[in-house]
Image (cartoon, rainbow, N blue to C red; front, side, top):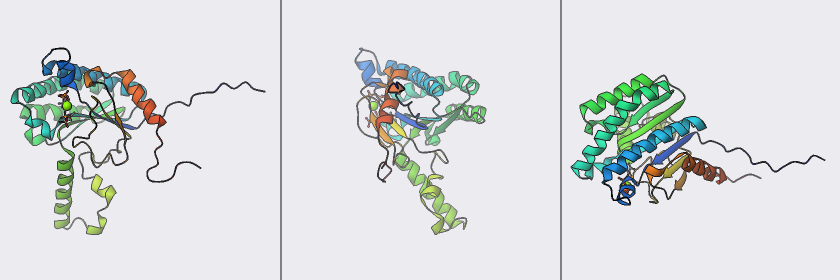
Length: 245
Ligand code: IPE
Ligand code: IPE
Ligand code: MG
């Protein structure tokens, strides 16, 4: 008789992981530091996460960096965040291009400064042929505005005579969202312990597994990511059907 050791099944790596990167301010406060220090460390956590996702073979990583509601923060913090974004893009575009990462920015660009828009364009066009990992960063992003924008585009196409009403279904609607043909997130993580979506990917997360982690974003590392993937693997995704026999 064969002595078979119980073997752990290898983890399924989610195709698309989305993260609401929260807790930078509280991370800084706990150390008696200004909020910007938390945001700076948060940018390091972004670099680490991109690297870990590449190593683990994740195909899509979507990060919520700045919401449409975050414009309500004090001007000095908004300036700091935009400064960090500028710095991140300047420093990372070459690295992303080299590492087979495709960069995509989603959100309302009309509120961003011209130089940041130019950097975004440069980053997207320099990495557009990369196929290793699609890194989407949501900036000035709000899911409700994204859905309204899709409805407007669809109405305009109908008015032009390019689209019949009965052609509008879930699949076609989703192609008018900022995420276009990207698959929906399988796993949606929010760090910092808050348990809400704060207007992030409301349409796309219809069947995402939600995971709220008690770690502030600047401390998020490969281990946190692997823990999240373990939890994901322990879930039973039914999509409205029944599970196994
Ligand atoms: C997340 O950290 C970063 C952004 C929303 C831009 P916060 O700045 O929200 O940190 P907390 O929630 O105040 O700790
Ligand atoms: C959500 O975090 C937005 C980002 C992480 C970019 P917030 O800190 O802005 O969310 P609320 O205000 O706690 O809901
Ligand atoms: Mg927050």
